[in-house]
Amino acid sequence: MSRWDDERELEWQVSSDVDEELEEPPMYKVLLHNDDYTTMDFVVEILQSVFHKNPEEATRIMLHVHYNGIGVCGIYPAEIAETKVEIVHRLARQHGFPLRCSMEEA
Image (cartoon, rainbow, N blue to C red; front, side, top):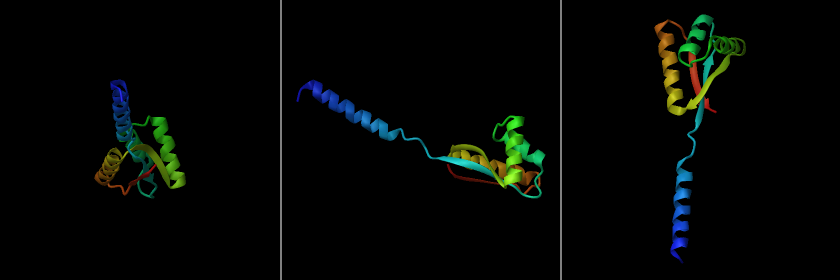
């Protein structure tokens, strides 16, 4: 084997290793669940402050949750999704609402 062949083989091995290491992380949908007590205004506030939705999109998602019982707030890597679920629950408790938020693999 020539030096050129050795270099090409090494390059292929390194390239293969890099491709395997660069897999995308699994993504998770963060979901809001409708209840009979949390106000629509509070849900819109949550969507704007936690999920960075503009007022129109926040209202659209809130109405979807209201009429369908559940709605997607965003899709994120696991750690970010978990953090957003925890923030929603903490803010809801602080304001006396039973708002429920969950995550599921996208």
